Image (cartoon, rainbow, N blue to C red; front, side, top):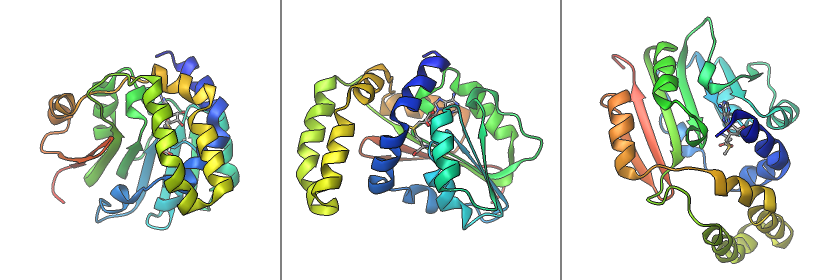
Length: 225
Ligand SMILES: C[S@@+](CC[C@H](N)C(=O)[O-])C[C@H]1O[C@@H](n2cnc3c(N)ncnc32)[C@H](O)[C@@H]1O
């Protein structure tokens, strides 16, 4: 996918994406997999900074990078702390002069064109004893049909209503079936569980995989822990 297209898509949905993810998403996989030494952390594709915010109370310094200006604006407005930095940077061209103890990425890797190159750069940027923790979509169908997402939004409405109230449930539903979000999902390309084991198993030797419904979690430890 062209970088410009991805930037435009996320700029369009940034506000509603942030609203929905602030309410719904569970970042606990990352919190369960923190490294022992908690100096510096990097979030690749940080979006509106939800995970950066979570990590900021566990690390001396947290850097979030993203290519969507709108996402970064929300992150800076809502989730800026003295120890957090947000940068407009492409994951395919990570440039840092200091290493990290943790590099995380959530639901971003399926947007990348050259995963082996990104992973190899991440490994170079990782301190000994550091961890790479990735969570991304897994699907036997490369691009699920749009009606699947619409049906999902309908089925989730009542549980969301019970949990978050009518106003929030309507806003979540509207985002999930909105034209820009469905257009974005229709351009996503996911890999299967088997492809995860093949690709990441080679790039991150001895990494651990954890299947969590629509998501696959990967944890890699560099050197001795
Ligand atoms: C589905 S959102 C996930 C945001 C955040 N990680 C979260 O879980 O809330 C994917 C994010 O990846 C960013 N992204 C896509 N391609 C990227 C790239 N090449 N470099 C940096 N960020 C990228 C998008 O702008 C978007 O903010």
